[in-house]
Image (tube, rainbow, N blue to C red; front, side, top):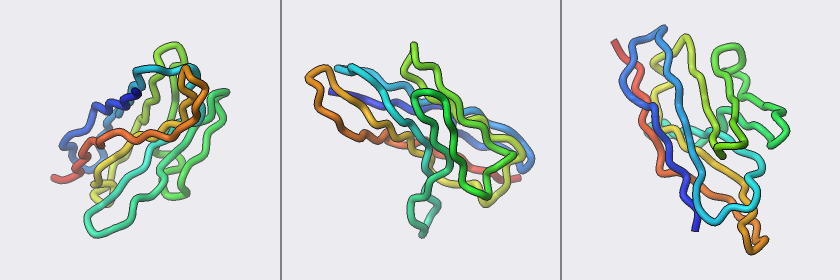
Length: 120
């Protein structure tokens, strides 16, 4: 089995910063693409940023220049550095990973989410 465990969420004032982490563990052969999504109250889950195993990145337009996604392949961990946070960034942030298991089965996994609240 595989688990994705997120951390780093919390309450921050507008203009502040947070760094989210997501570590994958379990019967992993290879971790492929990883990404961060978010879901605000009453809204659908949306892509925030994604990164391939080779480090190519993709961002939602509204996050370009403010958020940075990175990963440590040795630790099967993805990070999201969030700067200049706005109240509209308030949401539950979910980690997603495309994983090939040791039995060579390929599956997508989601973390349970971490809450980010931007408020004064």
